[in-house]
Image (tube, rainbow, N blue to C red):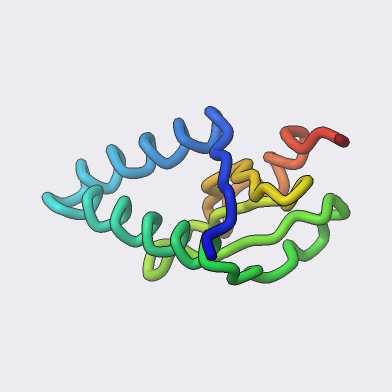
Length: 103
């Protein structure tokens, strides 16, 4: 059974910007990033829980978008998975933590 997923607008914008950047680096790379992001998204929907984000006290979890250096960062709230960021694994760690609001 698939879990309900909500993608925050900031996260969607990050994924689109990353896809555009990769596409500029090589034809087809942006499409490949989007395909791998969709595969990771589906794993989350199918119930995989990912791993805790180290050093962040928000309850956030992450799922890799392999082979790209990106993570889907998400939280679970009231039975819904909320994707708060598509974050680069080495740039600006935890910048997205301000997007997590207490319910």
